[in-house]
Amino acid sequence: MRIDILTVLPELLVGPLGHSIINRAKEKKLVEIYIHNIRDFSKDKHKRVDDYAYSGEAGMVMTIEPIALAIESLTKQRDYDEIIYTSPDGESYKQKIANTLSIQQNLIILCGHYKGIDQRIRDNYITKEISIGDYVLTGGELAAAVICDSIIRLIPGVISDETSALTDCFQDNLLSPPIYTRPEVYNDWKVPEVLLSGNTKEIDKWRFEQSLERTKKLRPDLLDE
Ligand code: ADE
Image 1 (spheres, rainbow, N blue to C red):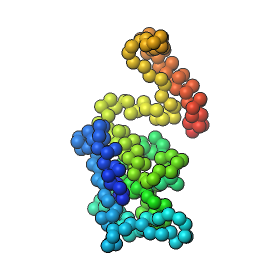
Image 2 (cartoon, protein in one colour):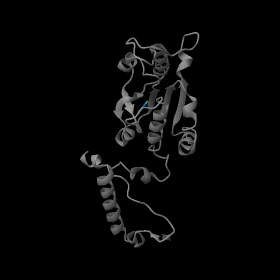
Image 3 (cartoon, helix red, strand yellow):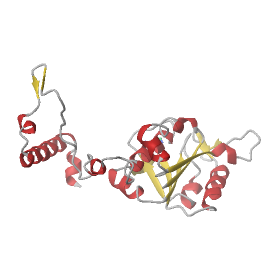
Image 4 (tube, rainbow, N blue to C red):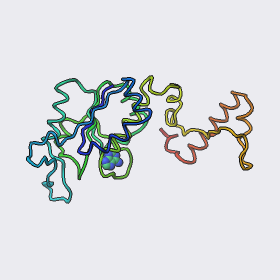
């Protein structure tokens, strides 16, 4: 998979995409990530990439040309499966979207900033608009990092125990059950008896019941889906 990220703040992405599992995925050539500075495509002598909104609204808007030139410089070279725009007014990001994106070959992620981007970019280039939650970040970079992290870990070979990605929370619309490790007792707090029984059938039943109970309590909306 190849991911091209367009941003005005490349340094915000270097850290989140430069460590641990994501870095190993890059080293194993399972993913290539290219971070492009939109400013490099500005023809303005001060490298400006924003301007005032026609509506007179407060806040700056990202202008068309540098973004259009950045996108076209990429689409000229290869086909992209999706051109994603990160924005609080996009579709709510869910595991199901991560699953679908993880089997694509080439993705562009455009990080929003300021008050937003000129609507004509959204109308003419963007194929998917994603919000990572009902709150507003200062920019789309952290959202882009979240999207990259969630899809790269699903690429076969990235996580060593492949079943662990399949049994994640949300893969079956249930929250994960509680999990324990040694010691068996700490401060009088005991690991549930069933987990020490070695009876895998009983353990699976217990885990499912715990998942269901937790989902009913914390995320009943998932059970309606
Ligand atoms: N940019 C600002 N807030 C955002 C959010 N919640 N999701 C995606 N991109 C954003």
